[in-house]
Length: 150
Image (cartoon, rainbow, N blue to C red):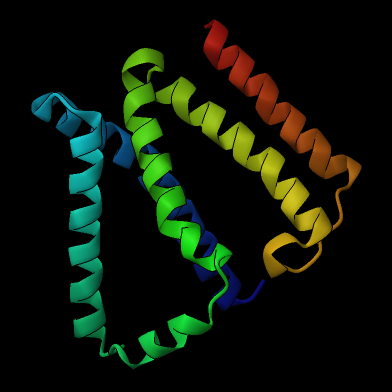
């Protein structure tokens, strides 16, 4: 395994750690504001400002924004999907807890990733569904059931 691959594996693992942390932090903010919608809004404002700083500090610049007009309509839905995800997490955590909320999220993500990979949806490289991959998703679903039950 190349050093480049290891970097991206570690990056993905750290990103995975951030997801339930973000949900729990946003839930705390929702409690303080007494509004999951406002908490989600503030989360996106802070995220947007953070990305603005990163673009400026990294020297990425804004010249690439002109190419945005060439993106398909589907490509523009990412922010909407992210807003739904964050808000659904903030709303679900007080009712289900962090572990069950995110185990359900992971299980549903894995089901959809198998479908996206298998058919190459949204222009991703095709990676056909296989018995081991499906078994992995089933094991995750068993994990969800165990977390829910205990």
